[in-house]
Each structure stands twice: as C-alpha cells, then as structure tokens.
Image (cartoon, rainbow, N blue to C red; front, top):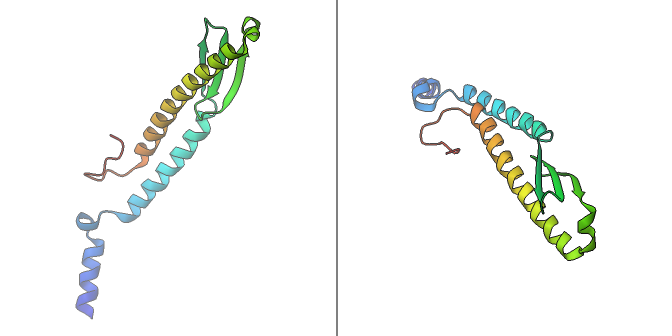
Length: 123
C-alpha cells in the first residue's frame, strides 16, 4: 500500500507528466474573467453602417445590439425600398459586429489560456 501511495504521489506531482493542474485552473479562471470583461467592453463599441447614399444609418454594438436607426425623410415615400435598405444596413452592421465580437473574445480567451501543445483552438 505504501508503494502504491508513493507511486501515485510521484505521478500526481510530476509536472512533466500531468502539468501544473492548479496553475492551469488559475489560467482558465483568468481567461474566463477576461472574456467577461471583454463582453462588457463590447457593449460600448459602436459600429455604424450607412446605405442608400447615407440616407439610412444603423448603429449597433459589437455585442450585436441595435442602438439607433436614422432614416432620411426622402425614403419614407417608398416603403418597400425602405425595408430593403433597412435589411441591407442591419445585416452589414450585424456582420461587422459579429466579426469584431468573435475576434475580441478569441483574443481575450487566448490571453488567459495555458499553452497546451496541440490544443490551439484559436488558429
């Protein structure tokens, strides 16, 4: 029994075999905190998109929340055209917001992640 205990201690404490588990857990917690901070910060990152010769302007956050829509009065006469332009502007803004969001969150997560060979999830 004593030999088994010594062997287990040797393997559990051998950092080259199992790595520094507590250090790794600390890094994971740090990464999680950085991701949460980044999510909050992305609420303040505003993205503007304009279409129809700047007659429609859409503002969204990097967390994909619509903040404002500005429409020039000249577009109010043709409802179908207005709807098409709104869809175009919203899709462009949300696409850019999604790209920024993914990029920023990946950076935040990677910053706190331990370097595990062969486990690069952010390539």
